[in-house]
Length: 299
Image 1 (cartoon, rainbow, N blue to C red):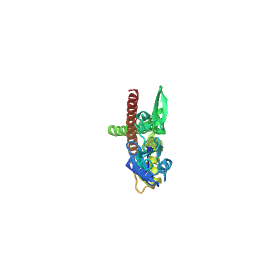
Image 2 (cartoon, rainbow, N blue to C red):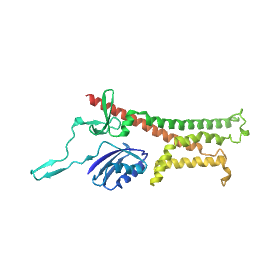
Image 3 (cartoon, rainbow, N blue to C red):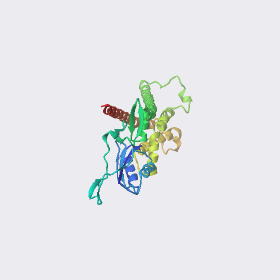
Image 4 (cartoon, one colour):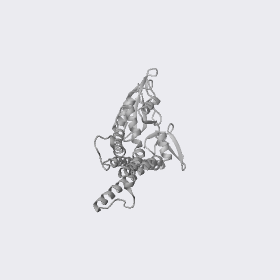
């Protein structure tokens, strides 16, 4: 029996972890599987005669997630009797401490002989997987992508809030929102169209990751949080589009101001903001782990 450690990507909730566990356990030869959502890792015990690490990683990919091998599979320690010599032998050989190193990204202890490595400023760093190595070489890549989507989403929400506040102030003071523009003469330049213009980038760009996650959930028939967020925000967005552009198909008359563009944008923006803050915390935790590793290496 061998033990395999995988670095997982794409999980957003406990349902995602459960989906990966079920996918791995469905592979013939897998004995036990434990997925840790917080650490984004999976520990798998399997029979090497029936399956291998490539098949297990492929099973994770087939349900819409990515899995990177953390170093090499480890054979479980066991003892056996050597009858010819009349004494016992231990088949597990302990790894010397000076052969082990800590991954500066995730903190996993890896064997220097099998781990990925890179050099920086005359010091060698060891990594459990390709994803950790890429994060070390370009730590801002993941944060930059998410930061761009968060910026678009929050900008749209702020503009929507300003427009809503301005409209309320205009009603309170008895003046029009923009007196110098001939708004009534522009049939496509209405309140609902303004909301549509501001919300669409938030819905499509900011919410893109939720649509990708929901598609994987539909494909594997395992509902996750991405699916719920995408479903709720899309229903609110499409209903509002119908109210603004196709009001005649509705069974009752709905005022153009009674739309839910803001609701969709706010949900996407704040969920993305929460994920972005989580990525920042994980990045700083990795930096602290890397600093501790460097200090232990010099001592």
